[in-house]
Structures are given as structure tokens and as C-alpha cells.
View 1 (cartoon, helix red, strand yellow):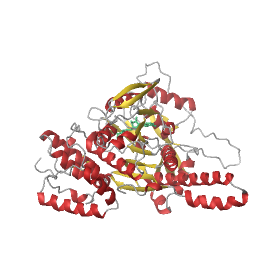
View 2 (cartoon, rainbow, N blue to C red):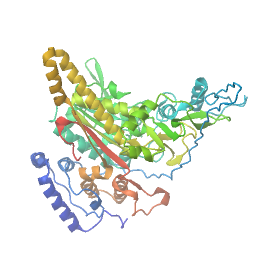
View 3 (cartoon, helix red, strand yellow):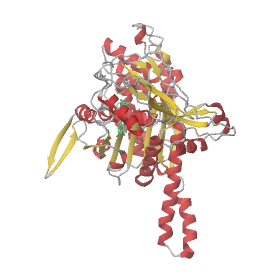
View 4 (cartoon, rainbow, N blue to C red):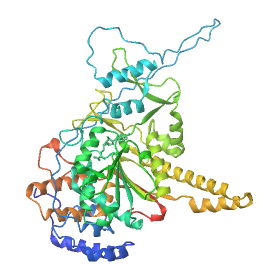
Amino acid sequence: SSSYPLSGPTHQHFSYSLCLAVEMLRSPAAALLRRLAPRLTGCSGGAGSSTRQSLPPYISSSSSFLARFSSTPTSPPPPSSVGARDDEAEDDKLQGSSSDSGARLSISVDRAGLYSPPEHSHEPSSDSDLVKHLKSIIKFRSGPISIAEYMEEVLTNPQSGYYMNRDVFGESGDFITSPEVSQMFGELIGVWAMCLWEQMGKPEKVNLIELGPGRGTLLADLLRGSAKFVNFTKALNINLVECSPTLQKVQYNTLKCEDESVGDEKRTVSKLCGAPVYWHASLVQVPSGFPTIIVAHEFFDALPIHQFQKGSRGWCEKMVDLAGDSSFRFVLSPQPTASLIFLSKRCQWASAEELEKVEQIEVCPKAMEITEQIADRISSDGGGALIIDYGKNGIVSDSLQAIRKHKFVHILDDPGSADLSAYVDFAAIKHSAMEASGLHCIMNSYCLFVLFMAWQAFLTRLVSVVIFADDISVHGPMTQSQLLGSLGINFRVEALMQNCDEKQAESLRTGYWRLVGDGEAPFWEGPDDQTPIGMGSRYLAMAIVNKKQGSPVPF
Ligand SMILES: C[S@@+](CC[C@H](N)C(=O)[O-])C[C@H]1O[C@@H](n2cnc3c(N)ncnc32)[C@H](O)[C@@H]1O
């Protein structure tokens, strides 16, 4: 552990802190900082960091929140590893029928889309319920299903979907996410949320919504970290959008929830902060009318995607079909599919040069739809959303992957036993949000239109377009390393290191690397297959906010 990059000369730390202090005084959040200053307990000193040069050398208003956190580390993160990507994907092209140009009239039948059942067998099937279900859909349709439908069934089928009946996270699960890596992640997202709440004018009621909370770890760390900011925690209505009943129960426990009776009414309260907690199957079910803060970490990557492939017949959708031996296989759709409409929408947002370079395109209509819902809500209720995920700021070509027990496996292998996810197309999210904002402003102007007399209407409409146009703004994406660096992860890790044993220190180092590092950790001395891989630049963060709030920290 002596090679750990966080231990360095103290003078480095001193000049770094000085630099930060100057930056803080210059920053637009300085007024806010000065007001908060008397409440600070002070940033703890500690070893300098040779890695911090790679992070933005400033801290914004977030420092005032950070400084008041408890400096005791909670549980150490579990180690995990991921293997190399298995890029093999079947890609069978279906051929159309040929026609006879001779004198005789001949009629040929395109059998491409027809289902040819495998030989009848009396062998007992070892297929899982989900596999039987998927096969029956394909047989019933007499043809293949889209990858999006396959993905949706595999992940969220109510009976046997991957997420529905088990806890899939951590060392004993299939993969590990940033909140599970280190408590610092949730704490810093809490700093972001509190900064936004301040920018919103510290409303007395706020809907804090998390999309796809997993085990609830991010939120628990967020609430623990913000416990001293009583006005913030008192304002919270916590809303969790979670499709899995099993994970809802895990979240209930992680948030230390208890059921209470208030008069005739029953409600669930998190004992971490006293805020009421509600669960919903989708974002549209969350009651609106309050200013809103939305957090979506590794939620969009679990949404079903369609894949399209360029070929001699133009763009064809890649589908999942049954082979002769009744195993799953990929095929190309013999005829145009309804989802081509989403491809065409996505292509309108891309430049000709971007389109020329790609042979495959992934499109996620569900991500577009949920982004529109987020934008609508933020337009009407105020507030903002933070989306963090692995992805790209442009067209995603071929990223769908399956992970089981921390190793990549084939996408069609034993569906339901491995996580499926795809890179998030942040450019599509930005365009969807901006389009929804435009629609919102047209609807606002229409409402005004019907309220006024005809001769006033034209003027009103013009004015309302000016007032409501672009009522939301989209910021980023920036890398996770930039986000966490700007929110003060270096200060946080140093504060925690002051007060921990050697085992916890090792966990903090590893966790720090995983959150903001890039590639394999150079200081690692443990087993090769457990080398921590940095998520610092693979993961991106984007914020969608109501313009009334100004630019969100630290975008
Ligand atoms: C990859 S996990 C991320 C968990 C958590 N945010 C984290 O970072 O540890 C995806 C989460 O989204 C939930 N989820 C996936 N698809 C969903 C959907 N369509 N509606 C609601 N929740 C969904 C899963 O059950 C799970 O909690």
C-alpha cells in the first residue's frame, strides 16, 4: 500500500488548499459559501495526493456541505472483478426470395419470417421458465422478437426477470456499481442535490426521486451525509422508482424504513432522516406539484434498446429468433419494423459524418420517453435531474453486453441469469430533453392562446414562446472523475482517511481509484483478477435543470 498515490508531501496539500481557497472566493457560489461558513467545522488536513492533478483543481459551494460530514468511514467496499468483453455475436442475415425473370410465371414465397419448428421431442425440457416464456412468444408470433423486447423480458418480466427476484449487486452478485464501491459516491451526489436545493431557494417541500435505486445504497449515503442539514432533510419526500419487489424490500431495509400510522393514514418513514418514503413502478406515477430533484445512476443502461444494422437492403433491425435446435440466435428482420421510426428520429440528431462511420446503431426509445417525462416534470415543477451512467456523447453502435458473476457472457446465454445493459446515448438524452422542453413551451403558448381574444392571441403566443421557450437547460456530459473531483472527493477521502484503520484505508484507496481513476489501478498489490478498474472516464454525468435555477454545480 506504500505505492498508494494518495500519500504525498504535505506542502502539496497546503498549496492545493490555498489554490482552492482562492478559487472558492472567486467562484459564483462565493456568496453562498460565505453565508454557510460559520456552520463549517473545517476541512480536515491530510496527506497530499499525487492523483489529484487529474481532477479539476477547484471546489465549489459543495465544500460547505462536505466539511460537515462525519469523517468516519462506513463499511469497506467489497472487491470485484470483471473479465474481458466477449465480442462474439451471431449475426445471421436472412435472404429474401429470388424471382424468375423467364417467360413462365413463377411464384416464390419468402419463407424468411416463417417459423420452422424443431423436430418434435419427448425429452423433458431443462429450460427455465423465462426461456420457455421467450420461446413461446417467438412461436406464437411465428417470427423473431426485437432485442428490446428480449431485453425487457429478460430484465423485468414480473415472474422471472433478472431484477425481479434477487439482489444482484456486489461480490456475491453479478456486478458492482459506484454506490456499492464507496460511501463517498452517495455522499457527493448528496452534495450535488443540496447545492441544487439551495439554488432552488430552499423550498420547504421537495420530491427527491431516484430512478432504479438498486439496493438503496446511494440514497442511504446521501441521507447520512446530509443529516446535519436539517432544513434540507426535513423538506424531503423520497420517491423510489423501482420495478423489482425484491429490491424494494432491500431498499426498505437499507433506508432503515419503518411503517407509521398518522391518524387513519399509514406511511413509511426512513429513520435515517425522518422523511417519508414512497415506491412507484414508473416515474409518471410519482405525484407532481413539488420542486423535484431526480437522480438516475445506472438506470438508463438497463432500459431496452433496439439494434439496427446497415446492409444491402438499408437499415435492418437485429432480432432474436429460434434456431432449428431450439436455441436462441440473432437474425436480421426480413421486413421493415415499426421501431425504424425511432432510428429515423435518432438519425435526424446526427451529422452526416457521424452516420457515415457506423454500420450498427443502438436506439433506446424508453430512454427518450423517460427523458421527456423528466423534462416535463422539471419544466412544470422546477428543480433538476442528474443522470450518471456509462455511455457516449453520440451514436452508440454495438454496446449491448451481458454480465454474470463479474464476467462477460454471451447475450443469448441462459437469459435471466445475467445482467443485460447497453451504453447510454447521452446525445439522444440531450435532444429528447430539449425537444420535450420545446413541446412544453408550445403547449404553454396554446393554453395562453385559448385564454385571450383573437387579436391578442398572436402577440400572446409570441410572448409566451419567448417566456417559456427553453425552460430547461441540459448540461454536460462531463466525466464521473470531473463531477466527483469538482464536488470535492479529494477532501472527502482525506477526511475519512484521518479516522480509519488500515483495512478501511485500503478500501478507501481502492474505492477512490474505482470512482475517479482510469484503467487498472497502478498501486494494486492483490490478485490480478481483482485489480480495480477506474470508472472515472467511462462514466458520464449529465444534468437537466429548470433554467430558473441557473447552472447546476459543477457544470
Ligand atoms: C443497474 S441497476 C442500478 C442500481 C443502482 N442505481 C446502483 O447504482 O447501484 C438498475 C436498477 O434499475 C431498476 N430497473 C431496471 N429497469 C427498470 C424499469 N423499467 N423501471 C423501474 N426500475 C427499473 C432495477 O431493478 C435496478 O434497481
